[in-house]
Image (cartoon, rainbow, N blue to C red; front, side, top):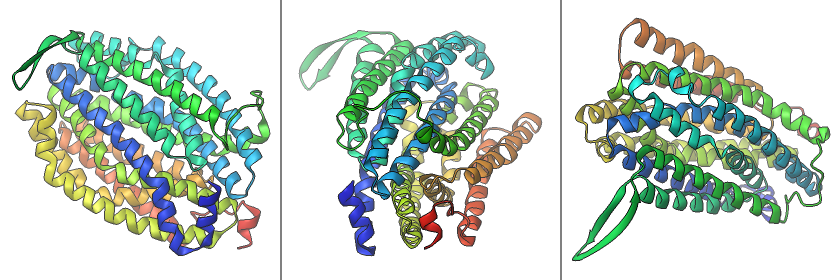
Length: 468
């Protein structure tokens, strides 16, 4: 990290290779995660539309839980990246021990919460009564390793904040391999594979949706154990020798960043839950099309979110070093790259939408509906990319209040209210709901661009920065 930070300080020509060195492992990690989502969806989709709906109907609750824990990680990302920017390695290592405490508290809390509510969540999500029991069982299994999931999210963010994006990528690879292999063994019954003239008997548990849940749960435990070992052995941010007692000199600034971000993510994710519940009320075809389209779309967001992680880390470094000019230079370069990547990504999504939907469903109604909404959202991808870059850089500098307000107002004032008016009161379908989602993304782009143009997106609390 030290060499990378020196290069970052050295000037404009060093910016792109340093940025790429941080971004590509995150992009590859997200690509692998998305590949597993694709495989999961395709494997479960082969069991029928009801199986896809049983798994996908509660997926937005997954966003709700994961995003809240990720918000805690953002607090540590801002603190650690700024500590490295200021050259204070001791303080960064101290923050790592507090991240361990955060994992224990958040992991324990969400384990009790999710397992206790597992039978109720499908009811709240308006899942079809015929699949509520199966959906609840899947949910219970998926959230049993909540402690490991918290470790994977928070410890991965700590490592990225220290400039190590390769270790979380490697851990993600092992999680994905475990998930796919166990899916293969647990979802389907025993069968014979034919490879050319060879017939190979393959064991299968034939557990269907439940098997998919067990495969994911075991994979989460693998990730949690591996990322914990990696953090413990890390040269710069290992918590070894540090106290696990609450240290408010570290926790207070971390929580100052994390709490608004947690409210933002919780509020927006709760919006996703309400959004999905209204879509679930449209029936199995709309639920399946929405679930598959979300899965397909996630692959085309990878360039945006990979760039966001790198931008947040480098913005935190520059802010910790008190270099306002470097922050502005970073923003210009990053947004230029982001626009190009998201235009290409959106174009590919528009063209490949029919083929991508056909990978996961043979139901022509599901495919046609999914293609329509995917082509709609493809047009808005560049706008979404710009907003998440500005938001990521603000988070890296510890500014989370403005993103909180913008996202909450956009989610509930545009997406949810609009979907309620269109779907619940107007009797319109999935297309109208996705139109409200796109309008939400464009609204965020417009608001963040206003903050970027007037310079208010860069906080001035850092004493060194205020002088530059």
